[in-house]
Image (cartoon, rainbow, N blue to C red; front, side, top):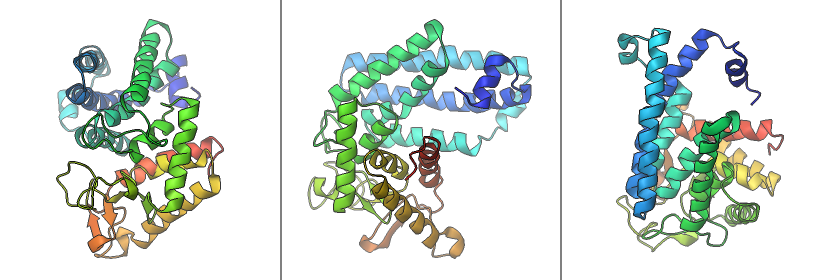
Length: 318
């Protein structure tokens, strides 16, 4: 609420050029946000939830994008500018995160990815529109508890196949405040215990599922296209590190600090500037066969950075 941009819009002091930049970035974001909501409709376990997510996607396109088109005309944003538009790094990183959640995750990942948008506008807005956002956010929040009931503190990854305890989804649910106080505490404790037991992380990076929860010796997930301990089937990722650090810091700040230091140490040791054999930040990695995938992967640093900055601002940095 105190951010200069939010205050500037509220009191009319925001420079027009800043607002013009925002409209272009937000238009890029909203077109992708609508697609992720549509993916949520496709991944929903029942027709009622499918219909709800489809309505969300339709509203985003018809109302939000239409409004931005009106602003673009008033601000003189030309067709040529739109064709040559390139998103800012933060816009690209966030939309990349949405796509990752929508295409490779399950409905819980989609819910966790889109929920902060609704909460943000519910927080800074008022009136009928803000109440609509609050209602939607609360609907999604209730759906998480009912649809993905916790196992030993960790939310399930799905409602059917591959319904193992989900590290990423649980950590992100804590991060965005999607759990009740009791379930939040249980989730934080489960993540801390897993990290302390060595079943969660390697070199500061995080697995989707604890190694003790693998479906079998041959695969982490019940159904997977990637080989065991590669990509999303058991590799360790930088993307969720900040969320896990944030969750663990709720109950054990020294432990959270240890995980953060391990993550930073790997970045320094594997820094892509060190030479052709280096590539950190990698998208994911695993010690088996020295597996490394996609060097200089932006999301592996942008998502943790956002969480670390938040911890610092909240005065809870480990």
